[in-house]
Image 1 (cartoon, one colour):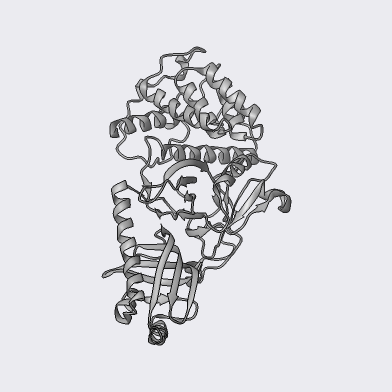
Image 2: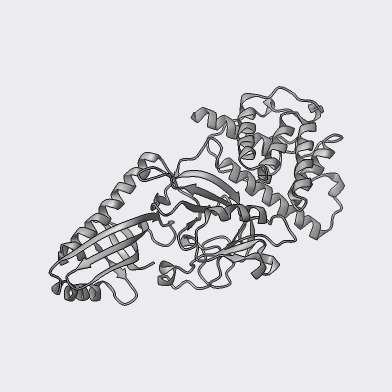
Length: 452
């Protein structure tokens, strides 16, 4: 399976960057995040040998085509899959098929400028060599603004390629999604390095979530995690969709709608981060898509894909974990970390229920904070509360646990959401609660406690 993955990646890399005589030689200066890939470029067709007919397709190319056809069978309007399929058909020697695929794509998505540019390159390939996207001699006299526009389209193509490569051969489990509650059907994971948004479906207790969709996304113009208002960066962290804004209530810039998220979250505020208005939204209605780093900090989809993602989002419940780079783990590692966190939550619950003040407070970090208390004042408060309890019963339900991206916090950290059911001799109540837990030298500790 590992060999097959390397061969598939090799085929795609050769398609997009390792021979100088075809459309695939796009960005020889670009470092691709794939290790230990050994390629023999002479096995791939030079442009001069391409004829307008179908040539034999090798196993690696067929695997790639099967992957793209599978995407298109699930969604015939997956325009990115059509774009990549056209390039792959060209690489396999089927120039007519490639041009036909791109013609249909530009008819279905007339604003998809990158598709138009590649179609033009494929049409030129009938008569001359094409060394890179938008590098035809016919374009040598373009003005500086047109040159910048072509460069932006090239960067978009590169980002889409990197996102596609990240899924070739399958991926394992994103460490971010440890536990999804029964009422959380889907979760969104953004990989800023790959300009990719992944949609995962909750398939049941004790089972890793299942990847069901993925999208190219546009991020902030500046790299890194947002720290202050106006820095043009996309934040990194665990967030939740707070509302939905339909397109009729928005300027054209936001396209077909928007999902605001709760930036700055509790941890952002602790770090004194500023700014607001971080949304997941569509693209300006005059465009199809935008370059990979082109927003003021929001996560931006095409309008067609924003409409598609709406089926996965539930207001107030759907998490969106934004990472500089997604960390993938095996199913075994995922399960082990899950067990570890669930055990820590259960220990915290039991110590609280037993009113064992010493054991209970040992579950809190010295850096603990909440809206009204620090570690010391929290201990004094709980001592007074415990003194008035003859009996108390505490249950937790609807538990979700999400790993926080490693940004400022050096130690591993998770965010746990749950419904707390509290019964005692003098108070009863249910509460939607959120804990941040950090892993210290002697185990997992509560760093923050508050309402969702």
